[in-house]
Image 1 (cartoon, protein in one colour):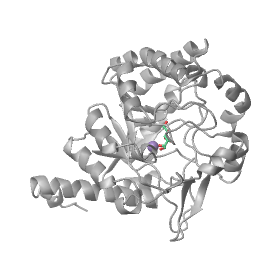
Image 2: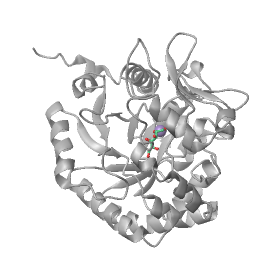
Image 3: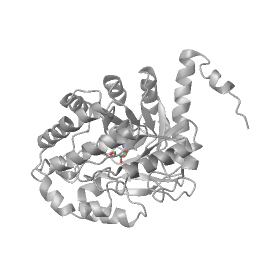
Image 4: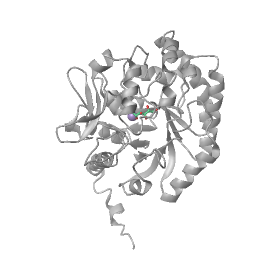
Length: 368
Ligand code: DNO
Ligand code: MN
């Protein structure tokens, strides 16, 4: 398991590369050019800037999250070929800069959706919260306005400029069924996966979050059967999954351990985090600890350990602790704690099966 940490870029993140470097076992950053609108080709100089920065801190830049897919591709409009062309050129450039995995998603209009970014928990920390009733009754435009107003740094996918054309987008999606979305996804994969293969890139789709249709928009990357169907749309090792335990874990029907077993070899990247799901379907993002939420993080790490998982892993979101002011879900403290929990589990499974396998590493005495 290769631990990485999401970083939004200089001036766009409250966490610094100096801090990331000090989290045990973190070898690289998960990055993107967040200011480039979906559909545009990423400039090589900008890609190399990040690469150089990573090198300077001894952090690799092998994982990109996300190269976002233009809505016209998801909608299956004739203009999609232009945007797919740009996507392909971006893949080629990223490969030249040493990138190995590209995470993306195929959610219409929105990326992840929550109704409260700072829900107070009993211990005084705050966390991302999803309230079913609020989503059912709300005008999506109003929700977007509220969320952007309450947060200095907007959530990825919720950037005001991207959402300007929301009304017309909703109108366009009225014609798109789930089956249409599958077809449009296949069209995209058939175009980009051969390029990824030639360039040594593993494409890794992220599940829909939450994994059910919202605001009447179709969502298809939601459960084990659909991921099985996804993998067979274009059968190639370059067509893989970003297995996000928190996104999939809010659906009680999703057995994540079973997904890890079935899809091993096609999971180049995983997001591990916990959520507590309430009886009415509301959910809150908790600490990573198994007993704090509904997702059995311990069994998940065990399943990865048993399948000899060599992919990249990041802690995904965390709570906001100790008064930290940060991008919602992306503070330093809780994600660093999450990493230590994941390593704790991993090392315990490792020593159980191999005895003192870690001794050699620990024998190394650092010199001043
Ligand atoms: C939620 C997050 C997502 C993810 C994108 C990937 O679980 O990991 O925002 O970054 O959907 O494209
Ligand atoms: Mn995720």
